Amino acid sequence: MPELPKIHAVTDIHLGRDAGQEAWVQHFLIENNIDPQLSPGLVATREQLRFMVALDDDQVYVPCADSLFLQFYNGKVSPALQHEYDDAWQFVETLVEGSDLSPVERQRILRLCRYRFDLYVGSRMILPSRLIKRLVGIVLQQLSDPDPFREKKQLANAHMAQILEDPAYLAHIRACPDVGCGLTLADLRWQLDYIELERLFRVATLRSLWGGKLSPQNLAADLNEPCADAGCLHDLFGPETNPRKKILYIPDVSGGFMVDLLLVKSLVRQGHQVVLALKDAFYFHSPVLWDLGTDPVLAKATDGIFVLDDDAVSKNQLLQYLREYRLVIISDGTAEQMNLYRVSVTFARAWKECDVVIAKGRRNAGIFLGTSHEFTRDVLCFWRANEGVFKMQCKPKSERIRKFTESDLIHMADGIIEQMREARENGKSVMFYSAIIGSIPGQTRTAIKVVTVFVKYLRNKLDNTFIINPAEHFENGLDGDDLMFMWERVQRSGYLDVWRFQTVDDIEVSFDLLGKKVPSAWMGKDSTFSTGCTKEMIIAMDVQSKHPEMQIIGPSAEKFFRRREYGVGKYFDARIKQ
Picture 1 (cartoon, one colour):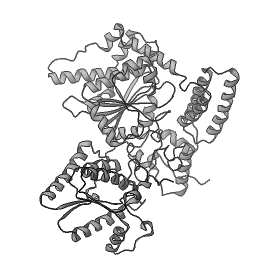
Picture 2 (cartoon, one colour):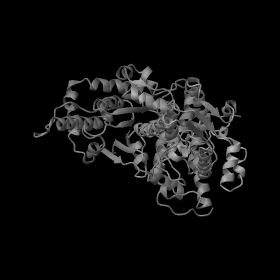
Picture 3 (cartoon, rainbow, N blue to C red):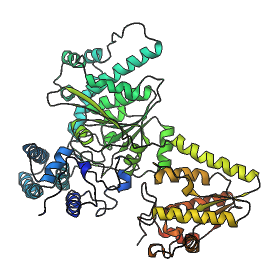
Picture 4 (cartoon, rainbow, N blue to C red):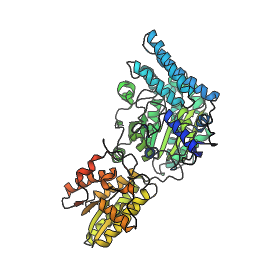
């Protein structure tokens, strides 16, 4: 095999520069079942990934630390990686041995898993987290209980609930600190909030606490240990004079989850909003969405918290829930270690709408801090090192990322609506032009030229008409979700007289105006080819039902409805129904 180009980090890989390297990367993605082209609908699209990861157009994301990926890339399995594989096998053995299967069945399943284990490990291409996911799937198919760790998790939660009511422990968790004099009330309030947060972050990682192995005195000693990195809490959350944040919180294991609930409620009390993401199905000791209904301790602790059980919520719906509730629980869509390729649409959109991601646990820290990739949001990780030392570290979001908040998008939309209102007052008709922008891969720049030259043509041809060209209002950083949200507000304003959808004739005229022949990729195309335009046709018909005087011009409505919902974060098509 040809030698691969030398790299020092995952971000050194740029597709399209070396055919051998690109083939190897695709092989790696396929082997780990994280190639979106081979598993559409199961693996996140590149557009959805870019909600979370700051990717250049030619970069690839890998859900692991660079140090781990480089071992695969260089074909060298280190003792550390072999240790992770051995740990994976021990997880599976523990799962099987703890089941209620007969000895013969246990032996059969273990042998089957061992055959698969040897095959996967022998490939020298599989991530330990994906190996665990596959083997656990084999075991769970043989068990009648979809969550064989249910009782263990419930015991951990119950024990932690008792501790959180035990005066001997609460005396240390709630002890009033010596914050000194000379503080204003606002400063004092923030200082107390900060100390409370730091303590809860610490307590939430003490597995020995809900395991019944930590005395009140040892808890007090741990809380008094200095943590030089905890100062990042000041930068992220600050006093109440700082803007309040939307936070996506990723927990780790049951037992500690009881403290997570206290922590997020403290953040909510301080004025922040929190989206709490649980696992979608069994993953050892991790809290699962269904635990809220089966664990009486959790049911009581989460009573009154809104649970969003839609894995593919739209941007509009998510923003509506975040307006109505300060604390929302969702599923991350996975039953494995955090893997951004496999998370749900709802999780990806929650990440995008939040300002800060808080990820608990050593494994999450390895994924988010160990990669050379940057993320679209600040990521705060906290965990216990092997020696039990409390760690906390913040990875700032990429400087290239500009976040458009809901208020930003509303402000942009309202500015356009104001222009529409003024045009109406001046006796002009108002037209919105819906056209293909990114429906043809690799043709987005051409599409913008096509729609721009045609709108200019219409403005010269139509008297006393104010025409809205969406391509003229694009700003860097806006994605398909942002645009659809913004334009729907404009489209439903009630100021439209004509809604025109791009036709084949429009496109032919546009290329003629550009002095070019129609390229083969554009032959026969019109707005029905775009799933974004399809969504807009649905909106147009709804608007027309409320404002019958509005005219819809273009292809007939039924021609649009061959198409599925537009893809997550995409300007272009999902796929035509077969």
